[in-house]
Length: 139
Image (cartoon, rainbow, N blue to C red):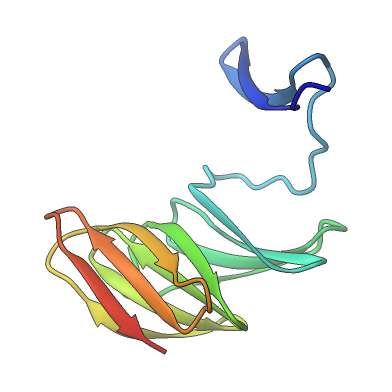
């Protein structure tokens, strides 16, 4: 039995994922009027997403979404889940700890956050920055 792996198609400038061996697109669960640079699952039935207009939102699989404008946040483009918290990184170098739709800055670097990852036990969050530095952020 072969593995089912996603790959990208482009039709008239729109990109969508399909599964190899199938021509059916993945199910659309939410439509936003702005580009979505990052998505992170929060629980079985909800996820966080960001938009290029400095908004972060929480949505359910049913398509209901709440969004807020993040003051001081520019272009959140990475998320990671560590235990019950979501961490977000932006192009200004801020790492945010999300609590519902409230948030607080836990670290500010001098360049954009390019990667976030959690340790296997979810106790430590690692943040990678555009200048090549990696920081260990204790929870």
